[in-house]
Amino acid sequence: MTKRNIGVGVQWPQQIREARKALHPFAKEAESRREKTRMVGNKLYINKELRHKYVNGYVINISQ
Image 1: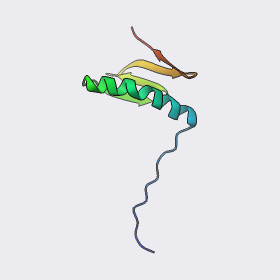
Image 2: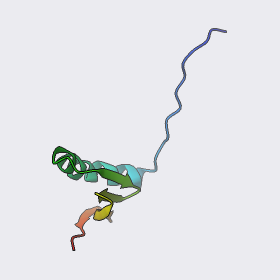
Image 3: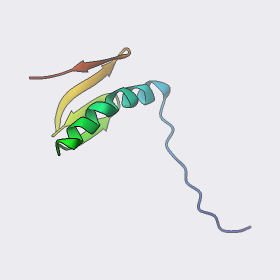
Image 4: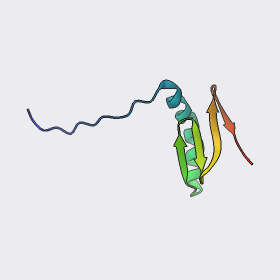
């Protein structure tokens, strides 16, 4: 048997994949303004503050 590089990726549930797909444009926009972004589940944090959340097929803007 030969040595091979085999990668095992994380398979996210369908709901999380939809949430990340919907939040991705908001993250890219913030990154273009040189802000730090992080996606955790169905939430998008920008500069360590919760800004957007994906609930029941909709992106909710959480602003203070």
